[in-house]
Length: 187
Image (cartoon, rainbow, N blue to C red; front, top):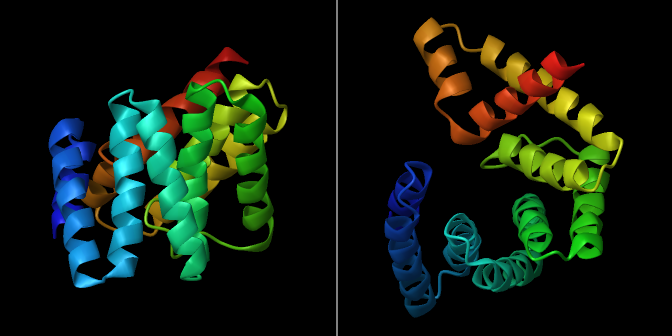
């Protein structure tokens, strides 16, 4: 519950409140021996610290998340955390390291779907940001693929209000669409 409520605050732009709840979730999960929740809390802490511009702390949180999620065999969650680590490394000007994380994520995407990912479009968007910042020609193709998948998922929502909410109110979805529209209109 602390993790979920923390994510709600983070997505509402209240990262400091999200951070406090994710820190509490981490402590609770350690006390209870809930290692899956612990890995999730580390990943959420990485997102919070990143949003607050505390990139060294974000880096450490993502490293902790990846280590624990790898140990637990949670491959899709490792991929999510690696995408967050990649944008954090970019912010820290660790460009080669960021690209190495993205390469691992892209290798995964070439072989697997993101069906069980918590925030699949955030994975795409994070990777796109790194590729675009490095002027990697794959950036636009990745953005196009993500936009196609986002639209396909939205098309499965039969209620127009739900579809609009999915496309415009889910932060990662909205950012991805805005960037795609910006790229398309500039061509």
